Structures are given as C-alpha cells and as structure tokens.
Length: 357
Image (tube, rainbow, N blue to C red; front, side):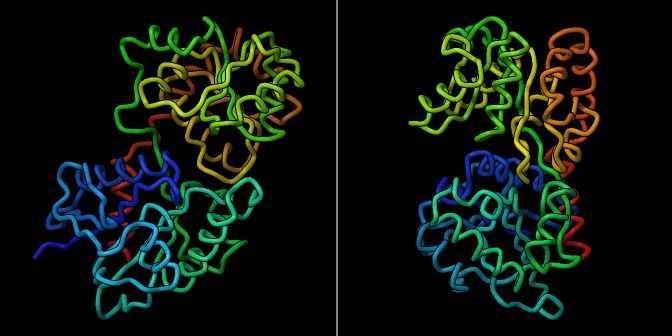
C-alpha cells in the first residue's frame, strides 16, 4: 500500500496571495516529481476547487466552500478530511487534535510571512485575525511549521511557542519563470522606458527606493501596486524626487509580463525590512538581474552573496555601482545564488521532514 501525502490546495486570494497560490502549485508539482518509491501525492480542495497539477494521484473535494472551510478550520472543525500525512502550503489547514504516533497522522503547514504580526494595519482586519487564530491552532496541533528562511524561523520563535517544530524550507521562482521571446514588445505595451530599475517595498521603505533611484538618475518601476493606490504611490515617488515622468506604477502582472519587466531592468532594488519571503528578489536573481537590497535578516538569508545587501544609508551608492561598474559582477552573483532555490529541492526536503516525523 502506498504512502499518500495530501496537499491542501486553496487557491483563493482572500487567504493567500497570488504568489503563495502559485508556490503551492509549484511545490505540489515538485512533490510529484520527487516522490520516494511507494509514495504518492494527493490533494484536498474546498468545494468548487480544481487541481491542475499533472501526476496528483487523487483529489478529495470537501463539502464546504473555501470561506466556510476557512471558518470551520479556524474553529477546529474538519469534516471529511480524514487522517494520514497532510501538508498545507499556507495556514489554511485542518489543524485538529490527532495521534501522530499511533495513527501515523501528521499535519504540517507553511508560513510565508509575518506581516499579520509586524504590519497588521496594512492588512484587512479579518485577514490578520484569521492568520493569528490559525497560528494559535498550529501551536496546538501542527507537527511542524515550515518557514522559508532562518531569519523568519527566529522571529516566529519569538511570536509562538513552537520549539523545535519550526523548520526551514526555502521557496523559489515560479516553475518556468524566464524571459519570453517577445519581452521587448511586452515592455513597450506596458509603456516602460528603455532603461529603468524595479523597486520593491512598502511605505517609507519604498520611498527610500524612490530616493535612491532619483539620486542615481534612474527611472523607477513599481510592480504589484494594489488597484487604486497608483496615485498615492506616484505622489510618494514625486516627493522622493522621482517625477511623474520617471515613476512607472504598475499593478499585478502575469508571469510573462513580470519576467519581461524584471528581465529588462538595469537593477532590482529591494527595500522592505519585513519578515517575508522576497518573491520578486528571488525572481530577479533567477533572471540574473543586479540586486541591491536594504540589510535585513531575510535579505541576508535569501539574497546573501547574490546581491549587494547594504544599510539603508548606503542604498544610493550601491545602486549607482549596480548601474555602472558593478553591474556585470552582480549579474553573475545573482545567477549563481538563484541556483540555490528550486521547487524540486524544496519538495525533497518536505518529503524528508515527513519521513523524520
């Protein structure tokens, strides 16, 4: 009889963002590709959910839709789930009392960021409340909580009494993430200049990126702007010295457009100091783009020697170097560092975790 690892695939943006939803699919594909002999991958989905991952052995559709399921699991009610090995690539998990020793029932979850604890005012109150409640359930019932960096593991250990149940398994760029053949045409359709830097961050940290770009004489592009926030971001850029003509605010793009924008950038500037997996920085490194990042625990862990990780006061000088003499060296470092991250590698470590448990 085969061992079955069931993955909770909740693709709803109300609970997980699009990056996390894509990560769940990439991880599931990696689990299928790296399954040990005698092991298979299945899926648990809310009512109405679908699974588009080749090789998934079985899909169990639960009786509740995702909103009802999220509420039920928050209360510790998990109808129709059953036992066995379960991994949730988010906090959306059936975290209930179980017997790991005698019933071989394991539940592990992945936590991608600590924004609900570090910047709760920037998120919907319902989302913050739900995430905090689910972490409390994880403290009680999860056999392991997976985080993507050692810095995040340390911070999570300060927030929740999980002891040695915190494990580190990194994420990666989306499967097949590369520059499309029509990248130049896509950038033109997005009305981007020939030379620019991509800036990632939020609030005052994003303003620091704007200032660095302005003082380096570069045009700046911001991705993933929430709909309706574009005027405020443009105003923040202007206040930092990056005029309306030199600041290009764009919303969420699909993989091909995002790869075209990142791949065409002269440099990528990561300004956030929050404890969260740096999705765009990892994508930029995968495309061998020079990365300049504000020093933080996560950036030291993830970017490491794959870019220039500097103090905020040194951001401008580091960007000037990346746009000039240091650019070629940083491209090589980024490409080398990107090889440390892959979904098959992450999947192998998750299989190993369940074998250890």
